Length: 223
Image (cartoon, helix red, strand yellow):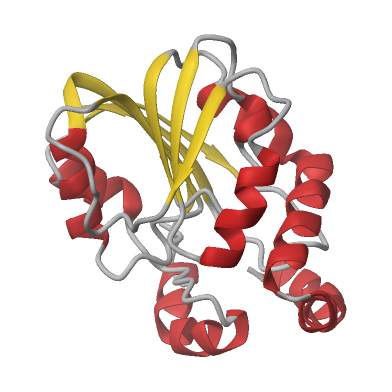
């Protein structure tokens, strides 16, 4: 935790100033480009490049994931914020997949039961109001045996790091300004939500564009 803390205080102030100056949408677009350069790109590729058929991406933001979907992917990208949704619509052009951007939130998906072959979410479950409700909605709209792909940061499994994350989460919520919780037990929640977990890959990378370095998990599961 010492290395992560030093890294945060070294790069955090400059990144925070950039966030204020650029505004939410442009900042997220810049951050996505930078963290891909710093090591996230291979994880984004692994997350979605083999998915085909009807896919729901929840929390699409400005469309950072769109270029990673392959041919044969028919993606409905869900984004609740108007400004981010407009940016995502621009990002949905000139990519290999067919992408339709729509409004809505993960806690109440505007789709019938068993609508999708796969669901994708990348750094989304940290900020939803209820992770349990969102996962229940994922399970509802997935077809039987449908695939769930998540790339999420999680609470550390190590003591005292996890305890410190619990104690400092209210401070982190005030700092990040986007409702991001850094102490969610996402793998456990997926399992408790009735999904069969096929694989969990642990990752961690350091990027000045996202200076709060947290344990990252690439989760592959099925309904």
